[in-house]
Image (tube, rainbow, N blue to C red; front, side):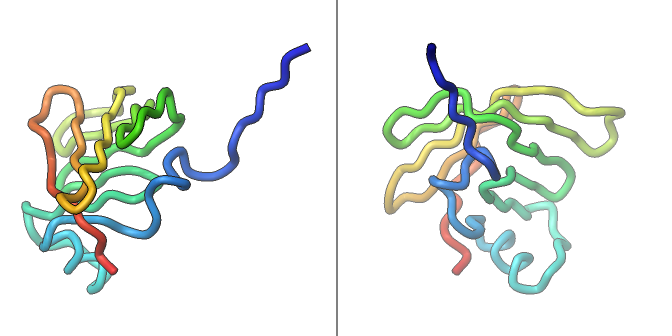
Length: 113
């Protein structure tokens, strides 16, 4: 009999601690609001930009430095949500980079702490 262990909590909790972002995103984290089209923040729960975002639902695969996450995504001006696979790559000192289908790679995103 095989056992399946499901981790509780955010899908990327053991890889992403705290908030990572670009300069504008980290400023927004510190101030508690976003006020620029350049805002990007990545957490264990998801990735958020000024007008769109993705909530991470489930980790699909993990390779060294790379996460593939099933995600519920939304975009400003569009009705409803979509389910997409979001790729998060950790490039060490260069920061995190995020790829959402249909968009250019977002990054670098570095620790906001």
